[in-house]
Length: 460
Image (cartoon, rainbow, N blue to C red):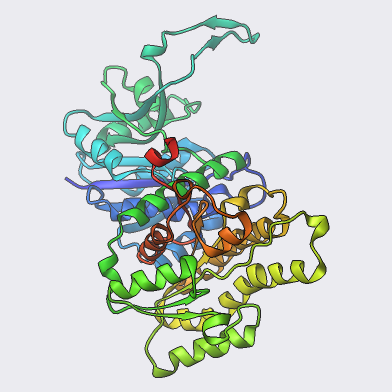
């Protein structure tokens, strides 16, 4: 029994604003639709995928198929002016398939669909002909009259919020749509609604969804999606095995002390060839592009690829902005921001050859400018933006770009600015180093990966 995933991607994205449909907006270096189709491509429960695209984006959809190597995407078909037209287009595209074909229909703008949900949808169709993915409602649901006044308050225990995918046997969804079009009924907002109205005798099962399976329809949704992606990236990094470092070549800028040194030491222990570059060790200054270029060319002169380039170099001057002189301001900007740009610029050709990864470093202060280190925190915000932008630009080149965001860490730079602090309130550099090295193996790009102390220590 074949299972076909249908990705509905023909929406215009008017609620999102702008001329680009929301499914083609970038999230963590890839278009939203790419994350969605990736999930179906990876799932063992899906045999074939059909993408339903807006007429103006058919070529773009095929381009993504080719770039990503999606072997399961067999067809890209034209969508219609509304959801019903788009689903109907997909149904027609598989009309010759066996009646018991399982059809799992999903919104392209729900990129966090999990394999667990796909598994549940696949399984439930063994016993039912239609199923909806739902989650409990934390809010009270109210019904209103046409005049806007409250009509009814259903018991919250019986209320659910519908998500996608929705799953059907092919003969069931085909018959429901045939009846709906014959009756001229076009006011449905979901496919289960069509089945319920046209085949009222048909039981529609429900399967558990997930709170993170959000639909991205507004800029606020995109912000939430970025936070979900950030959380997932951190979890993936935590699961990565450092044994994968064996034989890899890693360059660490700013590796003479603190986090950089911890990264180098841990990489060596796990079988990597790790080299460091810093002003104190070998006179490499990230603020000088020719210095960075020269060092990388020297390292690569033996013809071996460089798999990862990690830039931990940074300067923090903690004092009121009004008391910082021009030299101090320029030095912080030159090292923290121009340095990140220089390392990225010098790294590109090297990482093109290895299809490697560039890892930048930010600070928890990037989310909000901090008093008494305004220049530092603003440069760290700029590094995050640089990371995300390069991740988008270099995605099709096969270069991944990530950014590590550690909370307060016990380093010489911090001690020189803040003095002696309770060590229990600070991260150990080796903890940051481990997450950084694990990130080398993380798929995807444009991830801002948090490193935090264990919850038990935070509570303490």
